Length: 144
Image (cartoon, one colour):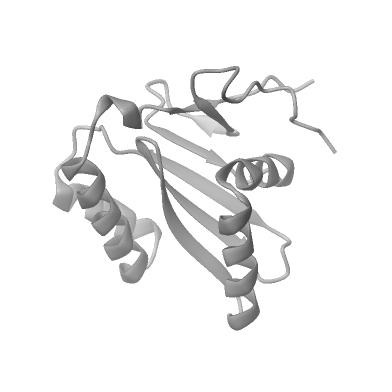
């Protein structure tokens, strides 16, 4: 079990640093399904969100999927009921895609309901966008 506790977080660093297993070259998409990184990222998001996931799991049969805004990213968090698998996908909202194209891409991967929640958050973020939203970065740690 790897421990990721040496990544500096604010106020030492300028940005919140979320750990991923893979990301594209432009850092507009990242994903992790590694349990240690998943837990690390949930702790970084906060206790309230983690508690909401736990409560949601108790009411659902298979698992839970939640959408949350994190800086310039929208994260889709998936967790199985038995906590055997968790995954977080990070999508950059500054990409040059039309709203419809983005909706279609999210709808392919997730349900229509998740795609609608995603687009609602996307619309809110785009309408209130400012440089201060650039307070999150994705980081691909070197495995030892």
